[in-house]
Amino acid sequence: MSGAFLAGLVAGYGVAIPVGAIAILILGLSARTSFRVGAAAALAVATADGLYAAVAALGGASLAGVVAPAAGPLRVVAAVVLLGLAAHGLWRTWTTHRARPAPSAGGGLRTPGRAYAVVLGLTLLNPTTVLYFAALVLGRRDTADPNGLTAGLFVAGVFLASASWQLLNAGGGTVVGRALTGPRGRLVTGLVSSALIAALAVAALLPG
Image (cartoon, rainbow, N blue to C red; front, side):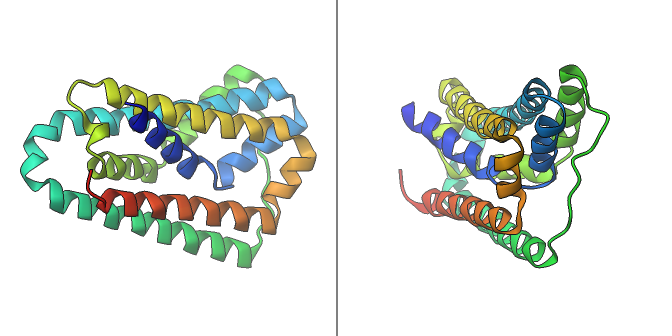
């Protein structure tokens, strides 16, 4: 059971660490308005990640018995998907680093409630997130436990990892914000995230 929670933590950080448009939005909101607004946006991202992880985990649980005979090939497929996501992350990190765009931190989200609702909607529109969690669930037997307990621990780990990282973004203020959203910060966080996802792909191929 603790393994599922730790897997959720790793998965949550893997999807949360890259500094993309949403992270920049959170940093900007916190810097321009208040920590309360930035924290609301951060928790919205964690909520979306938790929801997607729950969908993937519950779907994996319901399909566990059906896919059991093909567990071996599915683990390979899951590993390939994760490696593809890791490679895509590396490519996106490198192209963004080369382009060095000047991101803006969107205005109009001046209240915690509005920030939460808008950022939740934006995060839920990312189909890569559910693909990522679905691949993890199919690649790990313990997160597709039919009794749902380990699935719940997996989701809890994802939510806590995502929330802690995004709240760190919100609390970083303008100083940390500039460091993370600068070219070097974006490159480092993108490389760390891709490495985590690649490690999860390798783990999916290991017996256990």
